[in-house]
Length: 313
Picture 1: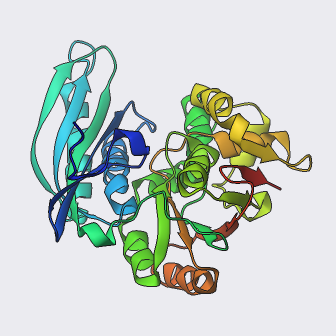
Picture 2: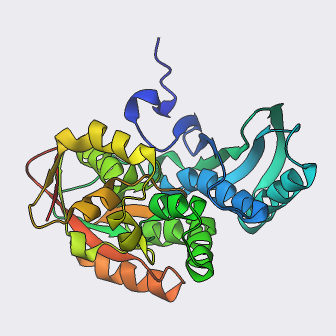
């Protein structure tokens, strides 16, 4: 029998699970971990922690506690690497005012790290990916390109300046964007991660029963993303995203093939995709810029029709 206190569960395809404890308090629960996306262990720890915390921010919540999840090849990697990863994660949690309460580790052939996170939200102030309304503007708070650039980084093709920008982008918390979107009156939100911009936008369109139009020229990109996309450097998850979500996506002929790849590119610790009333979008954009969210941009709008479809032109 379904539990009436489950506000958002498996069937909702939302960013996290939400369980109501009382009329004024609900908990948000999420978990995420993955293999390294940068070479520096400390930076990887920061990125993994920021990525896991993002689901709580996307739902308008405040993360409270976290537990480490570690898979470590102890027979082939020095323990100092793990210490740096955990330090990076701990420092990012400290920045987010999140308390580490435990964790679990296993010996594995491949290094992985992440967090399980518990946050809180007032049930009536919960933000989901189902509330977009026709006429809403869509704001993306971080540039795209983390999957493509991480792939190029593994091939040794990314210069130090781009690596620094990539690392900073992924390690940045979505906390401030979450606070500001709630002040502005957000209708719906999701964070852009493994399903890429198009995959997550399709989920918003389908769950909200609206159409969504995106302008590909308005979408912010990390440096060199277009260059490496045109060279065919992208992760395998991009193909899976394209196969799974293409039936709900209409892409105009003028959108370059490499840009289509970028839109399907799986992101790590990406930005928030915020849907809110058209008249409030410019104000929120200005507030984001004033508070350090400098790459935020209005990238599209919600439409009456066709419902559940994302059109890119």
